[in-house]
Length: 163
Image (cartoon, rainbow, N blue to C red; front, side, top):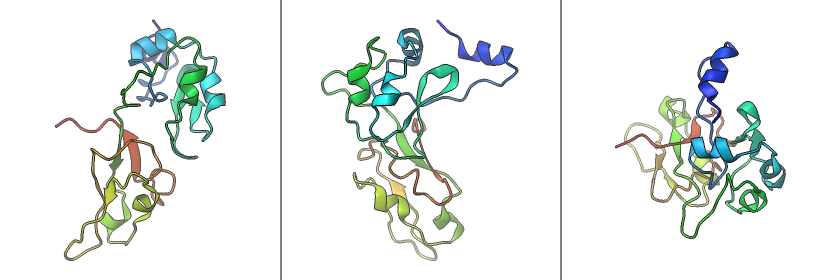
């Protein structure tokens, strides 16, 4: 098994950041063991959100678009590093709003909610300021549609905080 933190250490870099793997990826260690870095999944992605990440392993980058969960990446994965079973969610990731969000700075903005097809982002009224976005975790698919249009890059998709 490839130890990414050891490899990064010998390259003089800090530990690699936690990368988002394509939908239906195996657990990280199993994924790294199974993935051949052929990047067939990268080529198959119709929304172009899959890129060759650290070490050439496929990673998700939402700067260009969103995941439609079409399954094209899974269909072309010959080593089965991406494996979909019935009723299995694509991944556990959810949208997270950072402190850089414009409404937190007193500026009206609802762009993320406009792009959320799942309607997981709502803006309840707030006394004395712009409505702040609230993400309904149960509705959020982690598709990333809210990430690219955010003018301050305040939206990210990652594992939600525990608790």
